[in-house]
Image (tube, rainbow, N blue to C red):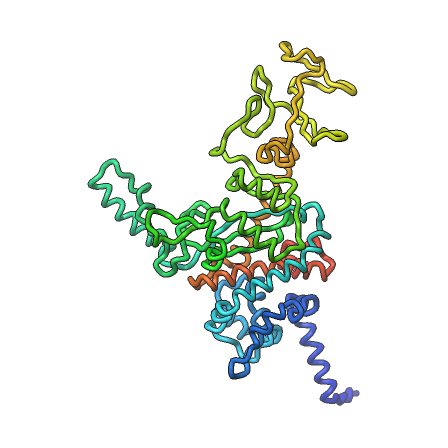
Length: 473
């Protein structure tokens, strides 16, 4: 007996189709729609500036641009042209972004250039929202603040390998008439200080090679979650003229900013934007080793510990200590062993050190040296006072296992910079415009912080480091 067909209403057909489309929706889109409310995250000032009256209604919405650019970073799409092609091929992505008509590449570029400062405000808002999440993940690591500088390479002619090859040929011609001239060393004296297409792209040495890039300062916590971004553009130089120095004798040469000299203005800007955020431990590389920086970090910024290796160029030691401030044996110069902090009522906090030939026996120690330098059976002791020289004793004893374990966390900022450049395709940019590079840098930071909020909302907080891992989890 043949089954009789069941008549369905248009309402039932619409519901079935909607349910089917919902089930076949990509996991990335479903997670973002379910857990991230872009409208509430975007600052009010961004809305007001974008929707200010310009004589006619906007075809595209602010949230649509934000959603599409976030997708571009998450999926690692290197160019706007490829993003447009993907949007045109995917109705699900079009619906997620809210595009009835796909913008062209010039509109994406114009959005970055017109609203780079608004994207910076969006990033700062996300920093405030993610700070409690960072403390929940790991209170100890979230109390570390790390800072480093990096360069964003621009697609200018000077970054083309053929440009360097041309300059090398010129250096070899010079070497023919001068046997003492090394063309491989002299070629860099022939390179211009800045790119012809963009004077902000300065000659820099990044990741083992010379290139032309714009410089930026990035601060993260011990978890590797970005806390602050400072783009060293003309606005930054105008706000902090004291950190700039002219390169060479020409007054027309573009001013450059060093790593150490950028530390104070970057942290000052960070404190001004986020007055409620505070950190007790600062980590940085040897480029920040200077007496002025240590005094500034302790007295002005309120850091209790500073973990910065000593720079060999600043080498100098007190009597009876090595270059790192560790007391040494007066006989053979061997460093003493660190025993920990010592103090008492009405006594200053100090670090206790003991001779390397003093061994622990029960509740005391016994010196086993054949030629002891003291009459005490305990062995020679020495004390160092952090308050006396904060550079040598920055709240933590240098050279100890505690120091080494703490400094190992600094690798997190290197990984974050690599994430922003590689995974979020910051190094695959096609525009040499400085403002566009600034917008892309802040977008990379925004995407990382959205991943933190997504991990919190999904109750998978252990996957805060990677948005892509959250998608497949």
